[in-house]
Length: 392
Ligand SMILES: [Ca+2]
Ligand SMILES: [Ca+2]
Ligand SMILES: [Ca+2]
Image 1 (cartoon, rainbow, N blue to C red):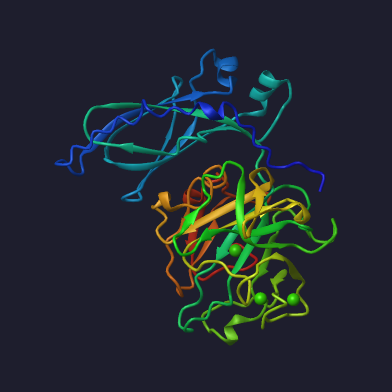
Image 2: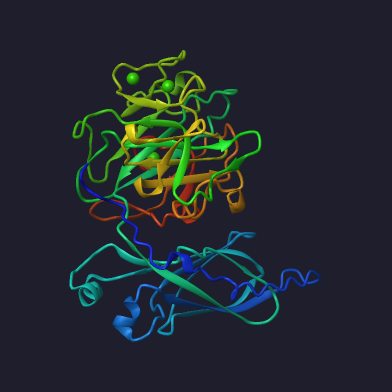
């Protein structure tokens, strides 16, 4: 495809400075103290200065999510780029700030009515607020252009309840949230690699996702369109799993099927098969039941870079990536770089029939799913799974 999508423009990426905000004073004798603090958002793009004469980011929509309690706070920054919160509990917070640039603002800044331009806090997503002195935290925001038209809309990995160790009903679902037709031909679905014995990972690789499990969609360019608002189901096995596992779901009408031709695998001849590029182990496409990460990438399979016993996929080719953890608050355990997915969904145990689906934010002309590149806030846990459709 000739379109160059998901072009993130990173400004001043290297100038992360976090010393001023980590004024950590643990005071271990004090628990559940309440905190009052301010956060000031500053723009690194120069947009705000052009528009308003200072770098403070006004009208930023800010979400703070408590790690410990899961409580969530939504605030909007004022004309001095500031939010103030009183009386919340000391904790580690996941902070997501987003400032949509309007086409009118972009006209002033760039001379074009650009859409899909945002300021976000790329580099500082976790803050620790401790009881004690009033704190003022400064967070820099950077420009992001574009959002992927295709996203991973659901990952079902846990397996159904009441069917022993049955796990053949896993799937990944892809969604077109743009207003135009796209083509799946050749797009890549890869499982992010970790060393299983030690769970070490390549999260901090500055350029590449490492994978030992890479499949691509069939087709030669325009064979497999995905319409605006369409969900595409890629099933481990495209069968009616209720036959083997009464609490599972019917996937006999899946759009694609992972068929491993060197293994005793099921092949529904009515469902086109994903093409295995690299997955030397296992009897079928395999994703972790409780934790793992998947990426959807637009990258030529014959240009994959071999590395050790893996292949490398450039971050710049990744349309979407989603990570899930058995404990999604343990973000230090993440394996996927924060630039692809700043958080994690999950918290699902094996064989519970629970699934992870992107949150619906609009359903006016077509469905729009939440896509902050942060699975901690983008996803919701559902049961039963909703293969090939939205769960409600
Ligand atoms: Ca299969
Ligand atoms: Ca098939
Ligand atoms: Ca679904």
